[in-house]
Image 1 (cartoon, protein in one colour):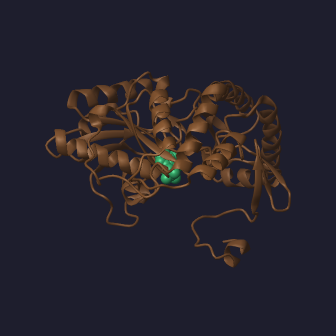
Image 2: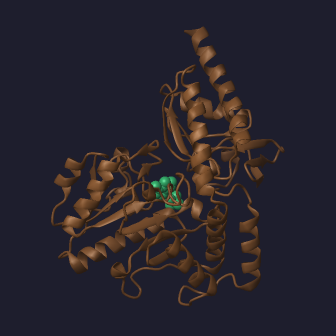
Length: 398
Ligand code: PLP
């Protein structure tokens, strides 16, 4: 625990570097010593339009002047307008808005169980994948496929079965008349950026159709252009029954969504909701972000820049002990020798570059979708400096 944490009034929840961030613009963020960092983590895949984008500030200011909060018991103009825009863009019929990814997933879990109660004789089990991540509420931690989370904060929420990713036989074997849904991330982000195979995803759709169970795509990390298409499921050309969105959907403003089709509009009054669900401010921002994404085709930029970045990382892999360069669009990762990921993150941070390590052997990159070639070249120089320092030293010591 660092000195800043010890002195602060913050409950300890994670290790943070001993700097205080102050302002951001575009691809850069500055600390209180005016040190500038190039951000290739994008606030954990959140700052889709970069730091403090004009579209978001303008939407916030004009909506704040008009109406900040009514109550979830009222319709507001931004709520109706954004619901129409997001359902049109996603090809779904209905949406429920919330503030965090975990809440959107809780909502999906509740809707799947409601479907089980109404249509499947009370079936309530949900199949999820090992190595998955669905959030930090009690139900979404139980849904998450991290082995060491299963006993944390026991007793866990019942009704989740974990099967191996890309193992259709295991998934098929796990389905029975207690099952109401299958929930997956198409690219397992927190799990280290692992893309599900097409055959597996098609197979999941077939299983769900055969048993009348719901297919839920958790697109909280992969949605809103991140993987090079507006939604990751567009790579598979498969339509889910429920999609959850978060992170980039608000470009930094707390917003999330659960989308579904009219036939699953099943909640009774009061069964789902929340004080800030669909707040005018959040919806005004959400619509501004969606418009920016569509008008500038940032998803296409994610595809183009992601390909350039992957190629460059592949080239670095011929000279340094890095391997398995992988991912889609601007959700990328590579592996390093076990224990090196944290050292690389710190070394890059010292030299003004933010990257992320989801585990001790993996580096994940999720820069804002507005990134360009110059930013990538600037990032590669710092990354190579960090590789050089770590691996030349290691070679000398070895
Ligand atoms: N689902 C996925 C796939 C995620 O990557 C995350 C966050 O990393 C979540 C759910 C949880 O979102 P939040 O932290 O906004 O609750």
